Length: 227
Length: 81
Image (tube, rainbow over all chains, first blue to last red; front, side, top):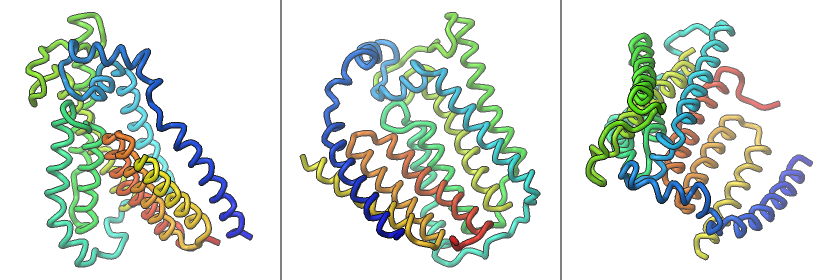
């Protein structure tokens, strides 16, 4: 019976998805309104090739700060849940890692780290940015943790780094209020088009977001696996 | 046109994985199935020309959430009743 219901749901969803796939493949109606505003203003405002980054950190900067607040609240809620359930940090919960994970982590960990740092630093030039690179580096650190569980990162130091990143983002926003009466406004020069140091405060903000997201994701998974 | 055909195949595979997750009784197999769905979704995002969303989906959906789900399953219980 369960299998029969599953097959019927499968067929229904497949047909629905086929119909929608042809519907959503037409994006032409999106090139008006806000999109045309951003497309026309982006080059003169920030002079960077990745328009998504300028939207995330500048045109919708408030939303990004709300997003990192939501992430912080979610992680805090999980910490509270774990400590309310009385799960103490035991340090050794799963059985030790096998040879495949150990030797693969030696080769893969540096590559993952370099790729994540590349994504964060080139956030204003190529696809990616703080959230994406932070998630990549966090999963790389998780791989290192899974290969050898005795490794520990001091939680006090990482919480300090995380808090400092957010405080510096908010201070940069307040400097914007001081110079131009707008929160998170770009008060630096935009530099040369598509060079690493360009786009004003956009790379700085996105790197700080990357640091915060890295620490948060890694600590969340480590806490759950270790408790 | 070829993009739409690839998208259709990938979406059918992901829905099939979804039904497999719902039917089977081993929860760790089901958790691996959810990471497979995230992987397929990230390929679909690349085809829809959203590479940054694909990066997020691959790293969070396939690595971090899979680790969290498996860690919680090991703590609670393995078999679904």
